[in-house]
Length: 326
Image (cartoon, rainbow, N blue to C red; front, side, top):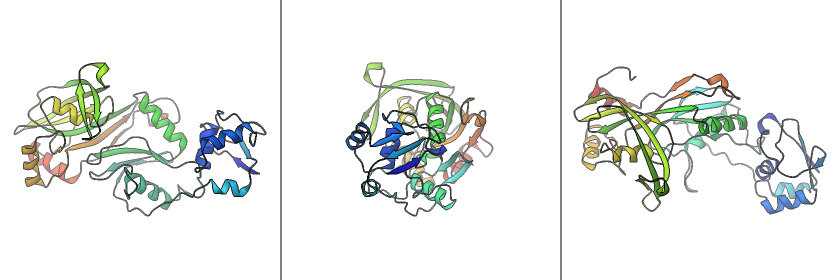
């Protein structure tokens, strides 16, 4: 028999989901069979599997130690050199600035040194994440950026924080602002609403005007500066869909500078030659917390800013003049 005491970092999740993480090689079928046979007890009583765990709860597994061990695969933690900047950090969350060119998560088994790899190793070195001790929880990213988009990504250090950030995003209580440079001069602020569908073969999205043709996406924008046939835009991302900003800007006739999927090749070539810009000028620059309730209420009203990467800042200075962006 093995007894498991639920800690603060493991509460607020269903019993069955906790056990599937704890015994990460066990099948759902095996787990539910053990629940039916009462081989798993919850606080000395029958376990259904849908109970919401609280700190201090007890689980008892009436299984052989060898059986339990065979279902528990140790978490591998590869060494990963840090390439991200730190925007904000406390005991619950880590807000980082991702450089362009870095994957947030692995897309295939051969992908290594991704942003999540780097963050986990950073927390391990600080003693805030111990894979051998945290068998049922791993710090996680709460938002993601395209590989070639730079800027703010939020990681939750605890399960409570991951759940709270995800809820804040679902409630639209986290404002996410991007900075982008587009071809053409945009004279006034506006809003784009369209419906997206994915073209998986091309890894692109298409825009439609009818709701039945796709998923709703909304982008608000305002021009900050114009010069020499280009505009610096601040984007408020109302919905966060794949390639949303880039596809919306293309649909306006103002493609993002450096965008190889949705952009203008003549524009991209000019910036490659002048600035060695090999990716889109799109930066998740600023977030503002609006959630006033729950575990992260202490962040309400707080603004967090990731400075522009050096190349993008140089382009801004050359086209729009040096100075603070507002």
